Length: 269
Image 1: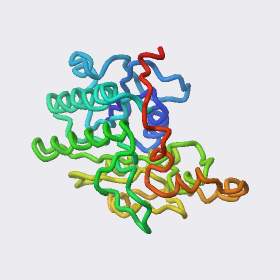
Image 2: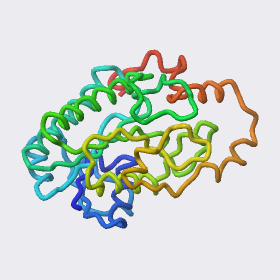
Image 3: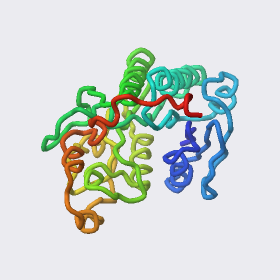
């Protein structure tokens, strides 16, 4: 499949540029800047995904879009809505213009961060955002669903946990998503014959996980990595109150007081 990765210079985008070709896909990218990683494969166009002319350049010939673009940290509401919702809307409209009918969208566990711990939390848990960032992801999921229902788009929204080379905290023993499993999950969504609409957890097959991967597995996702391989090292240090807070809800420490009043990055520039 020919796949356009929007937000190709970010951490996940750079990883997918390197790994999706290994899974058989023809990959190109779009970002406001060029990827720094030397092992990134595929052609990357530097440009704004809100620019119709740019989209008209990169979308023809694509069969699917993996949309990762957006401010990756907590920010004021106007910044979040512009970065996550308006950019996505422009890409969705561009996909309609060019007949691209499959989307994999990088949502976040923070769209449902206040959901309390349970033995098995379904991936389609009701929105309970823990931050303004999470609100942006909820709004983006709703926009994708509109295009699925009204225009027949096939789409998967991945509520991604902690995308890292390896886990480093107790919470990560639940939430870790390895780069390899991230590529395998995206690949499953690209290849699924009948995707329709899917809300999926973006995590590896973690032994201590309590986020239900049944829907992702039904699409063909078979995670190969497990945070348990790092458990002995992580658990060697005593558990703290912060660790207990991080284990109480899906959003972990993002439900704590430190994310109450986000700074405006435009004021800090």
